[in-house]
Amino acid sequence: MYEIVKKEFLSQNIVLMDIKAPRTAKHCYPGQFVIVKMDEKGERIPLTICDYNRDAGTVTIVFQTIGASTKMMAEYEVGDSFRDFVGPLGCKSDLIDESIDELKAKKILFVAGGVGTAPVYPQVKWLHEQGVDVDVIIGARNKELIILEEEMKKVAANVYVTTDDGSYGRTGNVNDCLKALLAEGKEYNHIVAIGPLIMMKFVCLLTKELGIKTIVSMNPIMVDGTGMCGACRLTVGDEIKFACVDGPEFDGHLVNFDEAMKRQQLYKTEEGRALLREKEGATHHGGCGHCE
Image (cartoon, rainbow, N blue to C red; front, side):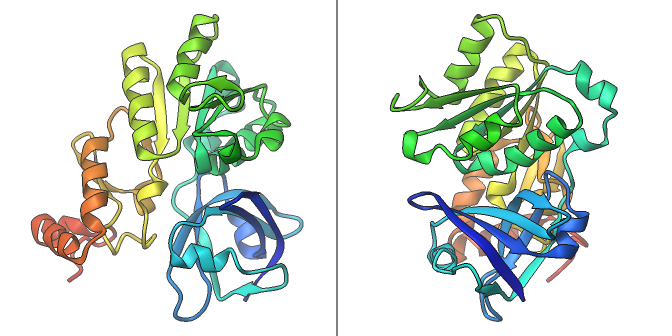
């Protein structure tokens, strides 16, 4: 059992929890995720790691209450426990394996949309601990959906907040903010964008025009977290990849976002899942790729 040692509502429907999971905390890195199950019959929920404390043996998760399972999770309190907390899973951020000199030579910008701010935070924090300064754009529809702003300010060189409705920070979406920063004289040669698929798509369209390398996290399309359900199958360049076993991070300029968004909608129905299984055959699953 994995005890909840901290719970905080970051907004009306976004919840942060610290979970006692020493083995996961000891081995995880920014970019990876965990699978949470509330009880023996509960749904498997993949969640990107937001933070971790190796000394305390805790892992921080952030989730938005959308479906029945996440709404039930939000009702858990400090002292309650999850049945399963599996991880770390997925690949760590590519930045982790680069030398400090290489990282310091980059001009890095993170673009976070909504709940995507949660998986951005551990990467920015890790880079700060290595002495690498980066900038961050946090974007959301309105002020109420801006999360982790103060935490991010403690580890980023500059944090720029933008809201679609202009209720807080700059007015406009993250692309508007990026264009404004470039017009103000900022320079970037490496961007990491994490958020809704549509946001990442348009960030990549812009950065491709500008010639700025861009990494995206495809965790929004994960369902099972092991490659066996086929939900997170996507095309990256000329290759078939699975976000949960090959990612979740990929070169954003190679990801076929239109295909991923159409496929995500189709996967929501049993009829759609059956159609995808028939169409994709052995490539429907990750891992062995030949499961019935």
